[in-house]
Image (tube, rainbow, N blue to C red; front, side, top):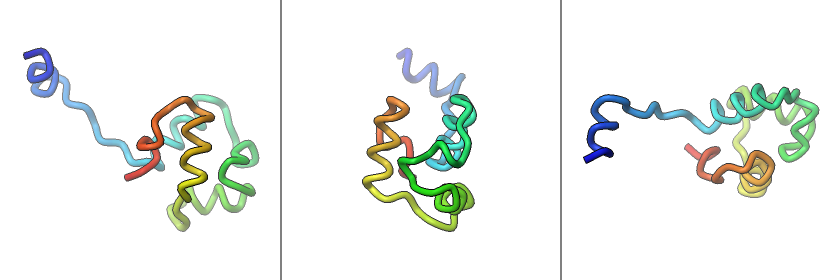
Length: 75
């Protein structure tokens, strides 16, 4: 019953993996150069621009760094 109420009155917004990554970076005060799990700052910029996808290895490392599910970064 509670689940139905929350879905009707407080629906959860779907967030893309990139949006989640941007949010987590901002919340932790991280810059492109801080994201060594992804690679060089150029590679990080390409990922954030949507020009490059995260690999499974990168997703696992990001999930471990931020303490979230790997599904957070997968659309």
